[in-house]
Image: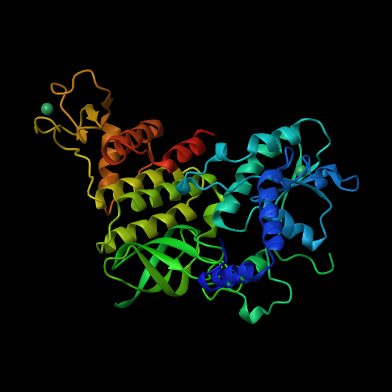
Length: 185
Length: 247
Ligand SMILES: [Zn+2]
Ligand SMILES: [Zn+2]
């Protein structure tokens, strides 16, 4: 189990052994339910019990914007921030020729179909990670999306909020400098 | 258990657990190694966020005899090559060069290989655009030579007779180089200009030629890599590189 070392594992074991049998069974059922019910949303790839997911079906979501992320877990991170009101598209990874991940291993055809099907998508926000591979993936998608006549944007890079310039790494500072903008905009 | 501090370039990097990363690096003095960077996925990791492909730094790690995986204890960034993510041909080409070293590099020290790989990443980074293809193809040939797979260009791979530089000559990728017409009749020949370009690319100090026939050079490299280096398992980056060139 990720994030659980030997010590934590033995603590969990003792806890379960001491707990009433109903508790252990409830946990077992919950795990089983996750495995049986949670799957990828047919439209966006988000993890959900009901497909299409609540975001795809949300009446108050802006249907004209699609945010492209590498993994479904990235959706939770963006949703926690509470700023974005559009839809998502999960790629299922990023281009990484070295790891054998090429365009055909990602959900790119699904994305192009969503944008090109005349359902009113006006903007695609590329929110792949700010890594070499994430950038290359964004670039690759940009090339495919632009001919479809949609606005393509890339999330900005910069300094972490609440951080201290003194402790930021040089590359982050350099990026923040490069992407500086007019004061007050 | 010696602690070493060496210049290293990251060739591949992937998540190991929720918090750690595995890096496959090439170093100047200690060859190719796999390192575990504990905590590297945490937002405030002491390694910074840049244990990524093509990044160069000074790495400190313990070399454990008989182990495949060493523990990275320190990393000082010397050069990030994030810009390689902003050019698809460059990104694909750098991936191809990295894959060659990952597949065929050893733990033996080879400072020339290290210099060639890092200098090639820089040339790809600086020379994005039209010249990028030739830069990658030339670097791939030089890396092939340093890895011990040099093609034979002056004499026939079958009978050993000299093959004059000013004539077209058959190229036999499975034999490992040029041949004379008598030994390989009917095989596609390599024209003298492309042969001269190949010779210049194989020369460690040679300048990267402007290809007269890029397609010929591309096919030549692919055929040689497939037959000589990767007969069973094809190079994943090669296909992606060619796809980017095709557009
Ligand atoms: Zn959905
Ligand atoms: Zn011969």
